[in-house]
Length: 131
Figure (spheres, rainbow, N blue to C red):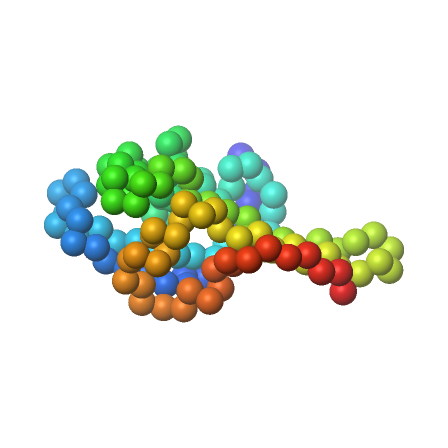
């Protein structure tokens, strides 16, 4: 194993009256991750280790939650998205900032669930700038 570091911030949380496994409700969080190292599949493994697997992760996730979310939203893909990327360009060329909107399939989850928190950090548009 090699050292890997992922910083994360919780943006919003929700609790749904959807029983999964032995629990009467299901709790989910939207987080912003900032990997400081580039190991594959770093973020997925870190959240599995924390016992908070990423929804839709067929390899490291929780199949009961994956099925519950898919049946409730129609989205059965991995809920991990590189929404913002910042790269220092070589020399004095500046910094490249890229933003990609979350997939359209996430709308049912983002707009249809009652979130407590700030969803303004979730990218809903595309864009590229160099500064």
